Picture (cartoon, one colour):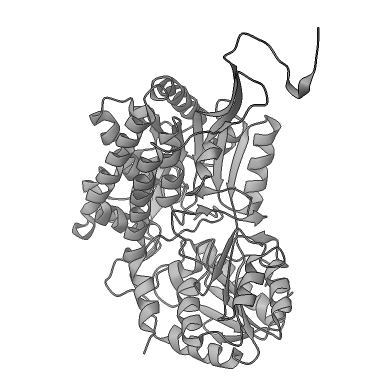
Length: 549
C-alpha cells in the first residue's frame, strides 16, 4: 500500500515552491503553421476544456498588455504535454511591443507610488479574492499547459492567494528604523521607497506562484510590474493577467500597473539591458541566470536570481524510516521532478540504506500515472519532448558512471511526454552526473558512514537551494543548522526538500543565485533604502566630534 501521508502531500499541492531552468518545448510556429490548425484541432474548442474560455482565452490570443491587449510578434502554438495536442495560439510581444509596454508601466508608476501603501494593499487583497473565485479553472489550465497534477495546479494558485494575504498585512507594517543619533537635536533614520518598474521573468514549472511572490510584494511596496512568462506557458500568463486587470480597472487604477510582454528570448534580453527596469527578477536555469545577471550588472541594475537546485536529503541511523520514505516519495515524484526543490540526492546512512531503497521501490510502483486533470493522478508528464530526451541521456550516463537503476529508467509508451520516475543506486557521490542538475524525475541514492561525510556531500555541488536532515538527535540538528552544516538557503529537519511556506524568504546560495522572494524581509529587494539625518536644532554639530571653524 502506498504510504498515505505521501499520497496526501502529493494531492494537496499546498504551498509548493519550485522554479527551474527555462528549457523550452519545440512549440514555435509561423503564423501560417498556427493557422493550419482547424478549429476542431484546438483543445480550447473541445467541451472538456470549456473552462479555458471562462478565463478569457480564445483560439488566437495576443501577449502584450499596456492597459490594452495587443501584439505584433511571432505567432506560436501552446501544446499540452499530456498528449502534445495544440491548445490555442498566441501572438507574442515583439521588442517594439515591449518598448510600448515599458512606457505604459513607467507612466502608471507615477500615480501608483503616490497611493498610500495600505490602499495598495487593499487592491492586492482584491486580487487574491479574484484568484480565489477562479482557483479551480486556473489550476486546470496549469495542469493542461504545464503538466502538473490538478491538486498541484490549484495549490499553486493558492500560493499566489496566500502571498496576497501576506502582502496585505505587510502593507501596514514594512518600513525603516529610527536610530539614536550622537548629535543633540538630530534624528537618524532609514527610509524605504519603491524602485519603479520591476521586471519579472518566470519559468514554466511555476507560472503562477513565482509571478505572485514578486508581484504581490512589489505592488504593495509601490512598484509597477512588467511580467514575461515562460514562452511555453503563454496561456497561463495571459489568463492570470486578465484576472489582475479586472481588479485594477474596477478600482479605477491604470491596468498598466501590471503589464505583460509575453515573448521569446529577444524580450528577455531587452529586459536585461533596459535601464528603465531598476530590478529584474529572473527565475530559470543557472546558465541563463548568469547571462541575465551580467547584463543587468553592466548597467548597475539590481538582479534577483532564483536558479537551479541539486537538493539532498540526509537520513541518519536514528531517522524514522517511514517518514523518510514518505518525504522522499513526495519530493522526488511531485511535479515529475520538475521543481528546483525536487529531491535529486538521497544520502542514506549505511545501516538503513537497503530498507529505505526497498520501501521507495514499493512506493514508486504504486504511484498512479496518468492525465494530470484526472482525479487520483499523482504523476503527470514532463513538460517538453526535449526533457524526455534529456531523461534518456542522463539515465544512460548514470549507468556508465557506476549507477544501477533500482526503479524506472524508461520512457512510457503512451501519448505525451511520460517517463518512469527513476531511482538509481550504487553511484559515487561525486560522479559528474550526480553533480549535474537534471530537470527530470531521477534521484540518486548513496550510502554514508557519519554526519560529517554526509554534510560534505550535501555541500559539494555548485547549487545551494534546499536540504533536509532526518534525525532525532538534537546535537546533530544544531550542527546541521550551524556554520559547519548545510550551506543551502533552505535547511530543513525531518521534512522534505520541497514544500516551503510563504512566510519565510525563499531562495538559495552559490549557483542558485542568492535571491530571496516571498516572506520575511524579502520585500527589501523591491525598494531602495536611504539613511536620513534630520537636524531639528538651531546648531550644527558634526559627527565624530569634528570641529571645522
